[in-house]
Length: 158
Image (tube, rainbow, N blue to C red; front, side, top):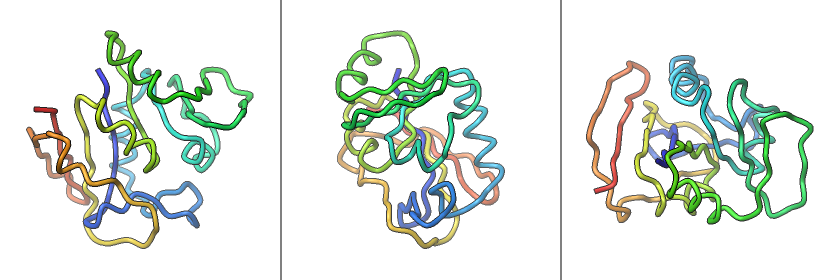
């Protein structure tokens, strides 16, 4: 099963290059939600997202996708060049994979995703990286949970 996890504001903004971790906001409850969702799981992200975070997230296997020959001196971090191959291998397995960004990885992964977990952050923030339009990807919202500063929306592929 392939999941996509994302937080975006009302304009689908997901990133700000000048922030310390690439995220335009700091909402503790959303970070806790992300941690609970992905702990002891396999997460996948692009090189820019991984380097914006600055280190591997604890208690997770991390797949970093990059066209460059990069290596990271961390246990549980694997670099892959071919995103499509990785996605196809998880699509045909029982193991869960959580897609965690950035924008290009999200865009390329959308056709393979079974479910999306979206944190809709209240308000408008400043940044320059946006989540791609997914209106034509055949998803339906199956659940909404109000968390106060954000709303969790669960989408499943029809």
